[in-house]
Length: 117
Length: 146
Ligand SMILES: Nc1ncnc2c1ncn2[C@@H]1O[C@H](COP(=O)(O)OP(=O)(O)OP(=O)(O)O)[C@@H](O)[C@H]1O
Ligand SMILES: [Mg+2]
Image 1 (cartoon, rainbow over the protein chains, first blue to last red):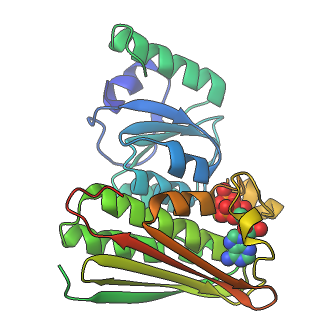
Image 2 (cartoon, rainbow over the protein chains, first blue to last red):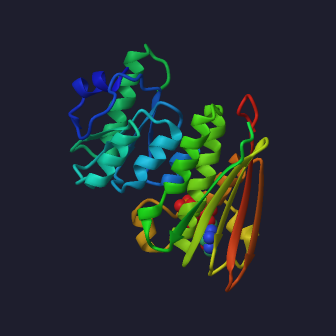
């Protein structure tokens, strides 16, 4: 599944320019940045309520495929710019983290025919 | 690989605007040298966690890196407050991060353990009331693994 395909399946708005056709390798939900630096995997989609420019650096260092900011939070324009310069796509949803993660996880299961997200 | 590249970046306590500047330059430099992605990732995690620690726990400091021979040496030093008990600080989950830093998603007590896990060698020297210095070594190996 790619980010482009995900946008069609979940109510997500694209907040910056970036590559939406990289395959997503799974998702990781966390609001703690050192936790993502430790446990996020390359190509993962990161689900979080954090909006600070630091999230762009974390995603870039870990080679994540993109970030979904939940709860309709306002995102610092600097975060969007930084992410764009690193090729990281930022998406926004009105859903909360738990619902978002549940939906994305289930999409993975169907997409992979029962494989793990 | 060993032209010997180095750079220096100042860091100020409480000021996130310089966060990630040094680690980003290091990433670009290593990518340009054709260093394996896994090595770049390990070096960047160490540099970024150390930069953030100066910003959230210290008054001011700096990050310096040097790429020479078969290693990357990252030195992050600050002017205090220092660490009383380094053994305790290294324990996963131990944190004294202030509320303002937690709001931005820092303070899980995982930064120093992350550095330890990703570095080939880590030396921490700290004098309470004076400051802390981290010396991080990442070996340049063809397979990028630790
Ligand atoms: N440069 C420093 N100066 C003073 N104290 C420090 C410094 N770096 C770390 N510490 C102390 O060590 C503790 C553990 O650091 P560590 O990086 O593991 O976790 P954290 O910074 O609190 O949270 P996280 O890194 O998960 O965001 C800190 O809470 C702080 O008490
Ligand atoms: Mg830390």
